Amino acid sequence: MNPHRRSPLVRIAAGLVYFFLYAPIFGLMLFSFNSSRTNIFFGGFITRVGPLIMDGSTVVQSPCGPFHWFCELSRNAEAMNATRNTLTIAAISTVVATLIGTLAALALQRYDFRLKSFSQLSLYIPIIIPEIVMGIGILVLFSQVFSFLNNSLNLAGSARLTMGLPTVIVSHIAFSVPFVTLVVQARLQGFDKSFEEAAMDLGANELVTFWRVTFPMILPGVLSGALLAFTLSLDDFVITFFTSGPGSTTLPIYVYGLLRRIITPQVNALSTIWILVVFTVVFLLQRFQNRRT
Amino acid sequence: MLKRLRENKSAQGTLLITPTLIFMVGLLIIPLILTLVISFGKRSADGNVIYTFSLDNYIRIIGISHNCPDGRATCFDPLYVQILWRSLTLAFNSTIVVILLAYPLAYFIARSHPSRRNTFLFLVLVPLWTNFVIRVYAWMMLLRTQGLINDVLGWLAGLVGARFTPLEMLYTPGAVLVGMVYEFLPFMILPIYTSLEKIDNSLYEAAADLGANPFRTFLRVTLPLSMPGMVAGTVLVFIPVMGAFVVSDLLGGKQVILVGNLIQRQFLDARDPTFGSAASLILMVLTLVVMYFYTRKFGFGEEIVVA
Image (spheres, each protein chain N blue to C red):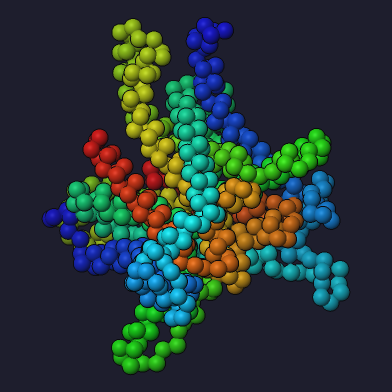
C-alpha cells in the first residue's frame, strides 16, 4: 500500500480549505488597485498612467498609475509613524525577550533553585488565559501606579506619566518571554550533556564551555524563539491596544482605528505591502533553516 | 563574592531566572492580583477607582439589577449572563467548525510526500503571519453588501438570468463565526498535523491486513491517535475566541456583543474599571474551568508547545 495515497475526497477538502485561507488575502490585495475612492465596492482596476478617473467623475492627477494608493500611503505621516513604532517595539522587545528568555531556559533546565516550579508555572499563564485578561491587568497596573505617582509627586504637563512606547515595550517583553523560554527549553531537553562535560574535562572553564559548546548547540532554538517573539510582537493587537498612548500607535492599532471610521484602499495597499514583506522574510528564513539542517 | 557565586549552583540559577521572573511577577501576577482587588472596588463619580470591599460588580454580572422598570428594589436582568453564554457558545461552535476544516487539511499534509510537507505547512503559516486585524478587514471586504461575495453571486445569477438581491452578511452572528474560524484555523491545523505525522505507517498496513476498510481504519486508528493534537488545538482556539473583541466589533457591529466587547467598553467608553475587572476575572475563571474539565477528560498533549 502506498503510504502517500490519499483519497480524492481528502484532496478536494484540502484544496477547499486552502482556498478558504487564501481567497480573502487575494481579495484584499486586488482591492489595493481599486479605482473607487472608498472601498465599499470595487470600481475596476486603476489602469491608466497619468490622469486618473475616480468614481466616474473626479479626476485626480496620479503620477503613480496603478500604484496610486501606495503613493498616497507613503505620504501618510500617521501610517509611517505607526510603521516606525511597530518596528521599534518589535526590535527592542525581541532582543530583550530573547536574551532573558534564554537565560531563564538555562536556569530551568540546568539548575536547581528555590521558586523553580513557581517560575516554570508562571510561564504558562499567558498561554492559558485570554489575552484580554492580561491586557486589562497591565492597563490597571499602569494606570493605578501612574495616577498614584502623578498625584503624590505633583507631576504636571509633560512630566506626567502616561502610556506610551515604554509601556508597550515592557508589555511585549512580558508576553513573548514565555514563548522564547519554552522553545529554548525544548531544545535544551534533547541535548547531550556529555559534550559539556567533555569540554570541562579538557580544561575549559564554564564561560568557555558555554560560549564554545552550549551556545552553538542551542542557537537554532534561540533563533526560532527570537523569530517567534518578533512575529508575536508585530502581530499583537490586544495587549498593545490596552497599553499604548496617543503617540505610540502601532500598525494594527492604526488600521483598526481606520476601519471604524472610513475605509480607503490605502488600508489595502498597506496590507498588500505587509503580506508581501512577511511572505518574503518567512520564505527566506525557511530556505535558510532548511539549508542548515 | 564572585567566587562564592561560582561554587553556588542554586545562586547561579536564581540569578539567571531573575530578569524573567521580574517580568512574570510584575506584568502578569501583580496585574492579576490588582484586577482582583479592583473588582471589589467601586467607581467614583469621575471614573476613578475607590478601593473598598464590595460584591456589587459580581452581583450585577449574575443578573441582580437595581434599576428595575417596574419600580421594584431588585429584579433579574439576564444581560450579562446572556453575553457570557454567547461567548461560550461561540467559542464552542468555532472550535467545532475549526476542527472540521482543519482535520482534512492536516491529514492531507501528514500523508503527503515528506519532501512536499514543508511547503504545504508553509502555506498554512502565511495567512497566520499576515496581521490579525488585516485578516478581519479582508472578511469585511468579502462580506459587505457590495462586497466580493455578493459581486460573484450576482454575476453567477446574471449568467443564468435570475434576479439577485445582495445578501446582508456583514454585521451578523454568522459573520463573527466565519471571522473567528478564519483567524484561528491554523492553530488547529498545526497540532493535528503534528500528531498525525507521528502515526507509524505499519499501523495503517496492519489495519488493512486485518480487513478494516478505510473508514473503519480512520475511526479506530487515525482518529484516536490524533486526539492529543485535537486537544491541544482546542485549547489554542477556544481560549482566544473566549476573549476576542476585535472580530465581533468589526464583523458583528452592535449585533454581537461578546464578553471581550463588554470588558473593553467598561475600560474605554463606560469608564467603570471596577466592573470591567470583575468581568475580566469571570472570563478568566470561566475559560480555565472549561479547559480544566476538557483537558482532564481528554488528557493534555505536549503538542501545544510544539505548535
